[in-house]
Amino acid sequence: MKLDEAKQKFVHSWGVLGSNWGINKTMAQIHALLLVSEEPLSTEDVMEYLKISRGNANMNLRGLMDWGIVSKEIKIGERKDFFKADKDIWEVARRITEERSKREVEPIIKILKEVKNVEDDSDKAKEFVETIENLESFTSKLDGIVKKFVKSDEHWFYKNMVKLIK
Amino acid sequence: MKLDEAKQKFVHSWGVLGSNWGINKTMAQIHALLLVSEEPLSTEDVMEYLKISRGNANMNLRGLMDWGIVSKEIKIGERKDFFKADKDIWEVARRITEERSKREVEPIIKILKEVKNVEDDSDKAKEFVETIENLESFTSKLDGIVKKFVKSDEHWFYKNMVKLIK
DNA sequence: CAAAACTTTCAATTTTTATTGAAAGTTTTA
DNA sequence: TAAAACTTTCAATAAAAATTGAAAGTTTTG
Image 1 (tube, helix red, strand yellow):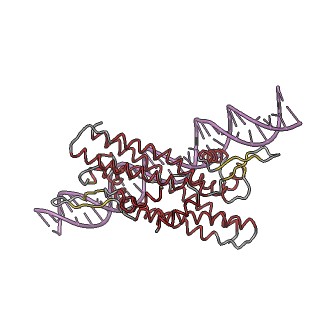
Image 2: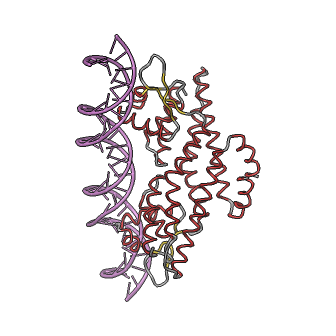
Image 3: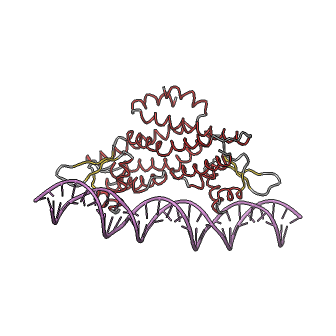
């Protein structure tokens, strides 16, 4: 396979992956594109490569910056903004985990705590509360462990991998 | 809060969570509804509670069965099918993890292996291959560890939690 | 300071995804 | 075996999400 072909295939596939995880295709593709570009790219480079509009490129680049996994780069002598993706995949995972936890997991934990407050003390209510508590406990634990997991550096990971996998 | 109100709030919120993770709102809501129902529900119960059509209810119930987290129940003397959700949240997590891995992670690992085969041996190509290899290694590891993690039973989890969290 | 270079916004439009509902299919019962 | 009870399918439609592009906004330069 030629390099360009390989890049194209990767960018395309990353877009598909994104769609399956609630991330829009274009955002995932831009991220993939920046990941495999040696040089930072301008908005126009992105527009041209992915055949998308200026507005679309701009909004999704901003989205990626909100996730903290893409940053602006200033090239001297150039007026345009350039963008590059963080290539340390551990750092990327850490950022995404933190953001998703803050945006999605924490709100759901809050709801779970809320709905546990049923006044009723019938058997039905007790069953319900038990189900919710299981869910809450599971969610909190998973969230906690995943955060700790990716917060740590790669070395930590390897060290503990052995123990964990056994 | 009244029990019914609490259930309603939970079902609604679970739907929102689903949307964020690429699972359609109705499917997530049906799952939530079955989770907090003491008794298995018929298609019509689901239709009525969520105010959705027969086709929609049927398709999403089937979807949940494909994920392996909802099953049909036959009530004697009743002709209708009834559905219940697996209430063991660890089992649910295990099933979802396995399915998502099979449906989404494994294909992407396959693509990553493919695109590593660039004929070119320029510096650019080497950089590209390195990025892909990082991604591949990360993805495989994460996939592996998550699978092992949820495959094990709760007891295993607690035992290892201590070591892992430190 | 005004024109040029560039970025952002957002209403309108397109595309994608979910939902409906009626018809076709299947199983059960009498 | 035929009617009743129930389930599945899928073309049409509705709803949601993504995208466009032109206008408004901002920053830089001469």
